[in-house]
Image (cartoon, one colour):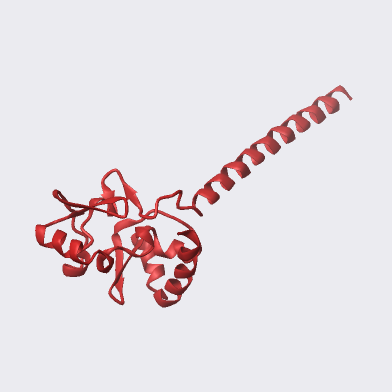
Length: 163
């Protein structure tokens, strides 16, 4: 009888601990999900290295690859610092920034199609209809490229709600 009561108390304690742990996990997941749904006032994805993690937005179009920008070739636009691999690329950007700015502020285009705000990898890019799209990773880009026109339609709707 004493052993049964002890076991019952132990089960109750474990159940309470599990319930508290589940509640904490649920709160954490909610916070993470909400943060993935908001721009938090940052219309352009940037790190300490600047917009596009310091990569040259023009080079995606002229060289069809991700090229690291240099500090001596930089421009402020959209409250962000953009870096370029050459003076020529910097000048191209200054003449027509809208041509080179990444869609959805450089956030992951695939995630935006689901209404989520997620960072991007400068190497996981695609140019579709003369527009630059970035994705979270090369694996995500592969998913994106299976139906980009549909994802673009969905992401455009979500982006308009975010900005």
